[in-house]
Image 1 (spheres, rainbow over the protein chains, first blue to last red):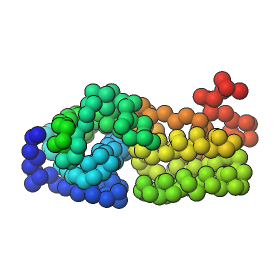
Image 2 (cartoon, chains in turn blue, red; image 1 turned 90 degrees about the horizontal axis):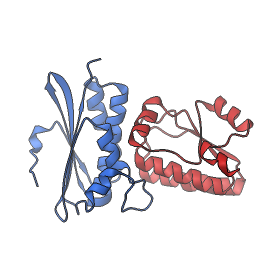
Image 3 (tube, rainbow over the protein chains, first blue to last red; image 1 turned 45 degrees about the vertical axis):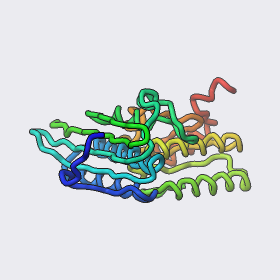
Image 4 (cartoon, chains in turn yellow, purple; image 1 turned 60 degrees about the vertical axis):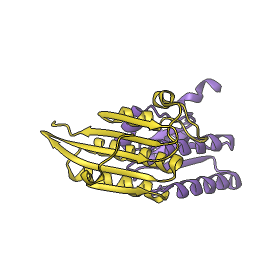
Amino acid sequence: MRRISFDEYQLVIKITREEDIVLARQMVKNLASEAGFSLVDVTKIATVVSELSRNIFRYAGSGLILARLRDEGEKILEIVAYDEGPGIGNLSAVLRGGYSTTPRSFGLGLSGVKKLMDDFEIESEKGKGTIVRVEKRQRRF
Amino acid sequence: MPVHVELDDASIEALQQQLLEEIATQKVRALLLDLSLIEVIDSYTSYIIHETAQMARLLVCKVVLVGIRPAVALTLAQMGIRFEHVLTALDLEHALEILASGGTPSDEKDLL
């Protein structure tokens, strides 16, 4: 799997306890807010971080949420969810939505993330881990 | 009942247990969940709300979600998350009006 250069990210949050889900969500939400993203976008971003960090905690036990702001004419918030967990078996089913290996779940988390963000990339290898990379661009209007 | 701003998983599950016990023992007919302070509802929280509503329905208790924030509603809709067996209201007054006029969740109308 691709290697992540952790130094390039402004926020690096370890997800090891359930409480870290809320923590990661708050921190990235603040970053987005301060950068001037709209309320709707901040809500989407916070929801995405919640989904990704929950997946890390639930399936891998531990991992990282990384975030950084890039300026390429427009501001871009990039979020990476990294874990060295079991990997996702049925990736296409997971991304389609409505599929979950956990009871008490809609199975709409990861497919939801894909719908909320402007860019979505995922790399997952059974037994190795999962990397999800998403981007949200700040609208000019 | 108002729900706090930042709810972690353990709190949500404890809340669900508590609510269901009270509904059963006090024979509660309607549960109003005030979500106006909630800034983020993810798919897990949505699932728990949905599950709670299902359980409450079996205990003959209507569930009303009150004051979901527009940004949250938009996010959930875009994710494709829908709530079944729940009523929704804009505020507490609206919720009481709905209940007084015998409100039924739209997905249940055919069952009556």
